[in-house]
Amino acid sequence: MLHILKLSVGPRDVASLRAAQARRVELDPPLRHLTRMAPKRAAEVLDGGSLYWVVAGYACVRQRILDIRTEAGSDGTPHAALVLDPELVAVAARPVKPFQGWRYLEAMAAPSDLVAGATDSSGIAALPPALRQELQALCLI
Image (cartoon, rainbow, N blue to C red; front, side, top):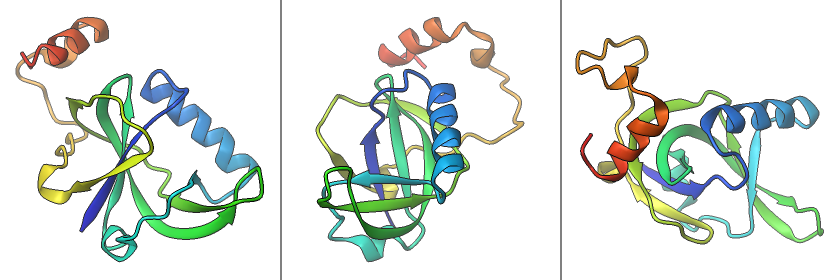
């Protein structure tokens, strides 16, 4: 299994990404993300891989990749269409420096999923988002 890491351009937070994707899937289903370069290791990605979104400098959410197709972009050139599961799965946020395009992410290096409904005994979830993000940037949490 192999994952893909991609910067989310436009949405400033996960809620904005979720809203943009909901609009997109309503207008033109299924939910997919177009990219110019097709993954050469597509078989490995399709073997349970996910697209890990980097939002506001953190890899913090993922979506399972269901299929990889070839589709024409808005300019007519062929693009790879990553067909995504609409469910956004929260993962342990990790800072990521900006990069162009997308990167492969080995399964062993992928952030772990956050368990939905789990109690946070440390109280970190209760911190204001800005403070939590700053503490993450300093690698304190």
